[in-house]
Length: 239
Image 1 (cartoon, rainbow, N blue to C red):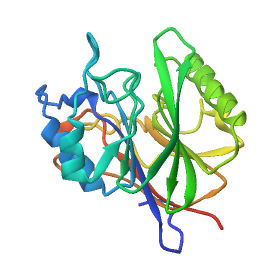
Image 2 (cartoon, rainbow, N blue to C red):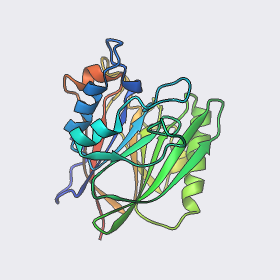
Image 3 (cartoon, rainbow, N blue to C red):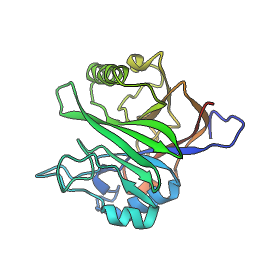
């Protein structure tokens, strides 16, 4: 665990690139991914590569099984009737967290990329969550982060976090468009699951959040289920 702070956390947020449920053994095993998600005990989970690549991009995970085994339900971000996400980005929330609004944001760059923005309410507390999977080239990633920041600047303020596979290999550089309004947390070298090479997966929080701790699941199932490890952060909204 990193960035420890006193006080009881009130919200666990997690991000996980599930690689369409294809594990390191090249078998598509949604059951393994669901087991890993359940073990995170998170209240909000951002998934990347949540849908298969071809055709209508059907969901790689069954929403009913997710809800049954994890207590998490998908936020309605898909633009069709078969996907779990949009541009592969899905959001899961624990039952009882209300969805007040969802927006889809096309991101600039050579590859088709997008982000989803969800306005949520948990125990009366408004929260905004952005889920994104950024591009492979830094110049595209920076344009994409700038587009997210610009969109957020035009919305009514509320405590906001941005989660996902940022695809940034550097531990220091490449994330300037989010500063100074967000602090970017990298809980560990989440890629590759078999060889810890880079902290591609990040959680960025605005000043409204207090960070209690961050972590990464390095258990035996997580190291097989995908090529990324899931990350998490325990947060509370400052009074």
